[in-house]
View 1 (cartoon, rainbow, N blue to C red):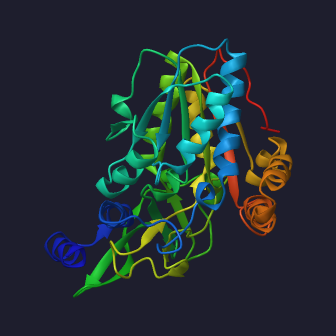
View 2: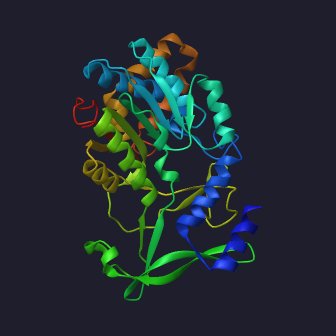
View 3: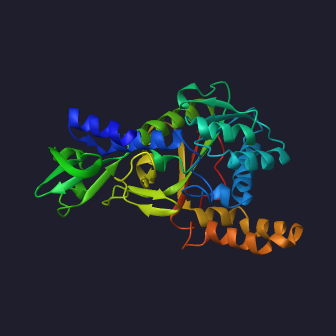
Length: 344
């Protein structure tokens, strides 16, 4: 069992960084189940309504059309059950775009669901094996939030790396060795005791790799996730189980661990790696500019029995108290590609 393995590793090697604990927990969690839907632990925008994936597909098709309709590949990072891809591909096909499909996914359980939704997909363990012979149209919806974060915590006059210790298989965060002030952003160095700063080197590595591909090959990436524009103080590590919040240090491998995405850092790294960056903008504004209200009305006319369901889905995806403000959309675009729609 994972808790016993983690406890043994901590007993032998000492407390481990929060990032290592999170990485191990999520690798087990996603590798052993389909976590989505009413019977799972959480639900994502594509599972709420087909409108989300359809509008993403049209956003990509518009960019592709204005770029001259080149041969392209569709890439999705962490594609869940393949629902977003299936809806996006259907919309893209109506616009004349029928790309080869590539999924970056390590979970065998989710790959099975993805194959049922998009049988022609090609799977990859990471972004390094994506094709390099044509522009890439990349989607990452709720992908970066699951990548591990390192945490620093303020204790007295110094910053310390936050580690995970254990007693038997009970895990808890503690302060480790102090770190040099130079690793802390200037504006945050004198924060109050107990303050926490997060960073995600794994996220930075992925976004830099994607931006370099876009700079060299062309194309665009759409990143949609919940997050903020950092650097900022705050402990955003959270666990979700059974559609409710839980203690992130309980039952590792049996609940989804996530942290808010620092869009400012990702955007800055993407620009340094050669991509144009647009946003982030609120998901509600993004979908609104793409015409989600009109799409909801159109679907309701065709399916009058689904009118209430569609109105509720529209509200959940766009209302500020639901996903509309917390979730943000950011675009990375190759230097020679046109500017994307709906980015403010």
